[in-house]
Image 1 (cartoon, helix red, strand yellow):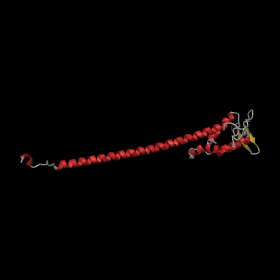
Image 2 (cartoon, helix red, strand yellow; image 1 turned 120 degrees about the horizontal axis):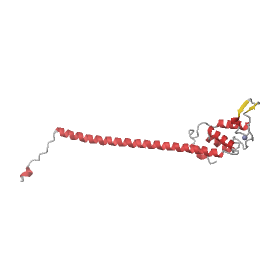
Image 3 (cartoon, helix red, strand yellow; image 1 turned 45 degrees about the vertical axis):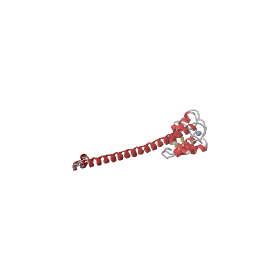
Length: 184
Ligand SMILES: [Zn+2]
């Protein structure tokens, strides 16, 4: 028999502290791995939430641009002549009072009655500073009247402007409606 092989195998005895340290190190490594995983998952969730937010923001911007573009295109269609009845409902849907006010001014600058349902040209010559309707005891300021062929159109146009919503189409959630109605 080989005396070397017969020698008892002596396992190194680890001191208790060393054993504990090893266990702690293993635990720490496990905890660190877990923390890393949680951090990665949190970051991924945050990135996903941000992506959703950005997508929603982009969608809102696109909808707003669509609405603004529709209003702008409609304004162009109203700059001269008598606007057809069927278009009026769309105008009411798309435009706000300030859009319509710009239209009245632009039409008048082009010597056309500011009221979109009227095809008359503006009367030649100036008007008095005020025109007084004795029948109705109303005073119409020329600043408002000068854009129309007559008092009736001024009143009708004023009433039409008052029927428009001051809230933009976008805020009324009407971006989808634009696609349906703009190409009438
Ligand atoms: Zn008129």
